Image (cartoon, rainbow, N blue to C red; front, top):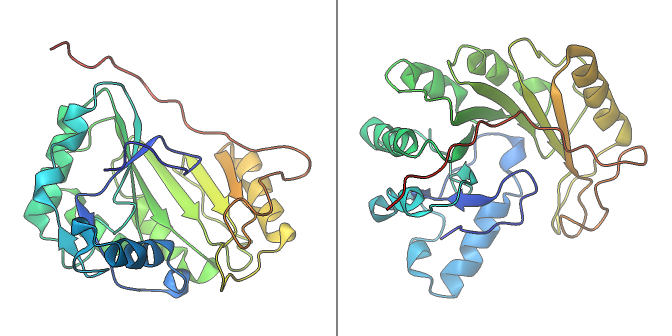
Length: 244
């Protein structure tokens, strides 16, 4: 599961949890919910519960079996810090990440308060990047929680971007991803909103990654912003997988 992905800023996905519930407007047209519905209709056993939150403990060790170093997006089909995920299970996920230093793990959550509550009880190896999803200026408080987390890389995913964010708090933030919404009920993104965020990142010396304009499909309108792609990312520290 997840050895390949079309997400531009990662190499693979790992879903020891699937399913979620909506918490803010960015969740309205959730791509993971749509995909889970399709997989459920196809009788995929991982999605027998549809988009109801489901733990998959048999997948906990999956990254340890991937010997080639990868950038791995953790829980692309859920939220690791969902209130229904037991803290003990989150600890197990972090333990596996610590056992696989040849990979880089990227975690995104909208549940920044729970992230902050649990952070002191988690190990934070340098190969774990922690991010929060923020869709508009109304939810920038999630960034305040993120800045308290002792992750080696702290990042913000602003996808879908639903409005201007003129004062993005970027202290102690290393990376910002921006993208427009895709799908049949997509909400439009304005170029001025994207440029405003990009310019804030350039001023603050924060890496900026523009993922997509969005449209009927994620790639419908391409990725060019002012005539170029923006693919800046923090540097990773690759380590070779153990032999054997």
